Length: 570
Image (tube, rainbow, N blue to C red):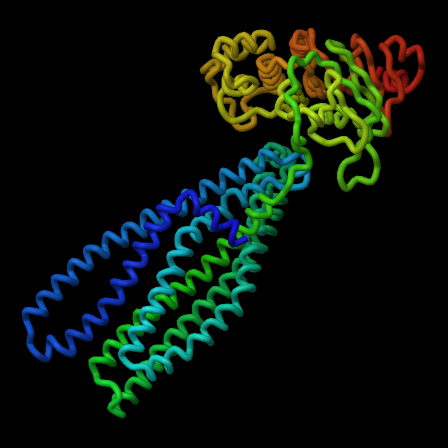
């Protein structure tokens, strides 16, 4: 995992090196001051050498100006490094999420995804910047202090540094517990995000059922868990920070006690002891930096571990090696001995389905709920992979063509229309991002949407709110159909496209759909059988397979499943 983390430094190697050089020079400048102080006390002040006092004062002033510049480089460009790495990781993760199949989103909460994409990567950014810098400065300061202290008095240095192994043991003992604690915290935060996302997205349902108190309780459960985990993690941080301070104080105490004893024995003079204690002060700083690094490392690595888990996932469905581009699609669709069941589902949804749909033909799929109508249509664009058998488009197995070229030729209009926050123009143009304003308007006219659009305040530039909340169901449906006119697919899937509309809206939408379906291979999924009476062919699905197929009249005369469903409705 560390190797995976380090690779994100490679595109920014130059900036990383500049940051470390600046950090090294800062550490070196810190080490200079105690040596200058020792020289002052030992030589210049006793000898009243005013010339050298002034000269070294000027040198130190210049050194502090340089130090200011170095601090700016570390403080600004170091953070820029972290931000750029965070950007790269977020970009990679978002690209990975775009690759994932439907099954991943079936099993993963949106809040957890958002937590990984936003909160976790923010922690990683801090580690990317401060982590190597703190570690590097600490190593330089500790090793430099040790060497210089050895130059002042070897026995006293060895006595004081004998505490360091205990400090390392203390740090390592808390290492694993802190990492697990921070990981649990990230998961809990994801759950809170999921609850909030659910509650806010469904706020109209919440208020219509007057379930605000229930939502408060549901949120409070997750919030309480987060509070407990946060309290646990800060408890570890408190013990860890207190322990580091304790060891730092012990180092100072040992320097004072044993230094005083050595002065008593005549093994060290006051000037050297003063320099020694000043160096000890410098040595405490990297010890605290190391403590800060450990905390940052645990936070960042907990986030990076969750990031890595997403990046390591393999989509259930990918282009196979050597997949070809599907071109000049006319729309012949064939299911050949197709069997399918959802992951973690024991029962087969579809079994040995054989169905041939000619180019330009319109077929209706009917049957009881759970029979697999939507599932069957979801197999055509390879949203899910068949367990056995083949789905062919124009005679080509869809597993042997690129998903992009396949899905570009398939249009889906669903009952639950999803519109993006933004303008009407942007939502229609989603069907063809290169479309001109005139082409968008023409598509809207074909979908019977132009008139109502022009009645809105800003016409095509009217903002429709999140998920189109400012529009009625019929208006949203017409925008989705206009979007489909722009896409101009050879194969069209209409999944309960008018079932949630009133009669007047349904008539308008039905006209648009008939216009859209003309000349295209069309699959209509419908529960309301009156809407598909004129379909060229009706296929009746029951759990497990196809029960019967034919025209409306043929199936009514047959007196089978379709006739029973029709009589139930009418």
